[in-house]
Length: 301
Image (cartoon, rainbow, N blue to C red; front, side, top):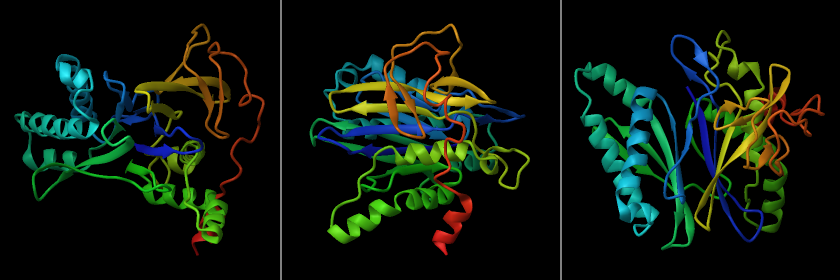
């Protein structure tokens, strides 16, 4: 399954919309190198998914094609709020096109398959995020949004665990905001929590109590207000070896890439490098000690 998140990062004059996810797909085993966050051709929005790939993957491919083939969508003549309605309509047409399915089983798959869609509105000059999910009463996908300043949008597994860990990490910001009346804004904290969970066997071990629903390295995609979508190569420790993860895929040592790289534990961004270049992550032994499971439990109690 999946843990996918989206939030607006506000640390300066220019906000950024960030999508992040784990990279595990399951079914007859698991593979931890799969793309779950997708840019869209108009470059002012992204989409991610959690759930059944036989529903999500072909739909996202058709959404990309629809934007490419519809000039008003590709040119952004239609605002992202208008695009959201088209995304929903396309998704509902797509699920009605499935034939030969067991209705109960298929509806169960639809209930467990959801999407995050978001982007920059040129009409409102702000970012929007929506969660697209199947409503069993209406028998169709519907949308909800917008998320608050310190509350990222979530789909997939372990949402309660993620929320508790994020709140624990933000506890000093929350206390300061309470004392000063300021608004809590997010930096890279949601990515830090996701990366921490992906190093914790409690969430990644398929034989463990929580069934290991997530795994692999984090994948990160940003949307900027100047209408540009940019993936980030994530510095990662893959079975004791330093690697870069780009769109869920581990980069090979001979590959070069032009996108920035990010340390997900510290939120440090560096210029493009070769796939096997040692960086700050490789030089750190214990990368994520700041969230301890027992501390989070005690904090909640």
